Amino acid sequence: MKISNEVSVELRKIKAALDDMYDRLNVSLYKKNLSAKVSYSKVKPFDSVSENFEYISTIIRELQNSERVGD
Image (cartoon, rainbow, N blue to C red; front, top):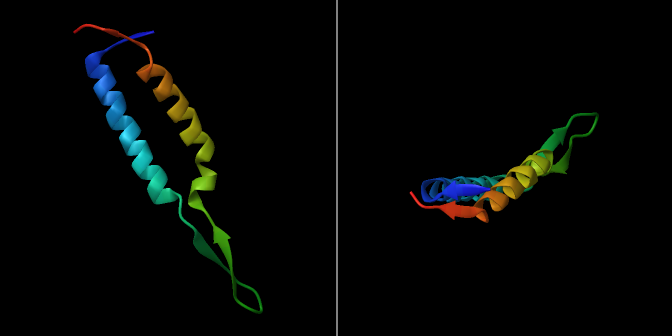
């Protein structure tokens, strides 16, 4: 696949945004469990979106490694 230099720059910006979202979501939070006695369970928000991140990251890496076409 061939991409232009402009597309390559935009892909780097997208990858940086994804990396930032990963850092923000990859934290442990606690969910309150209500019952006779209150308890908390550890929850990582990133776990619910990790497959999406992996897919997007793979596509971006493939595009970044594509042949460049002069603008």
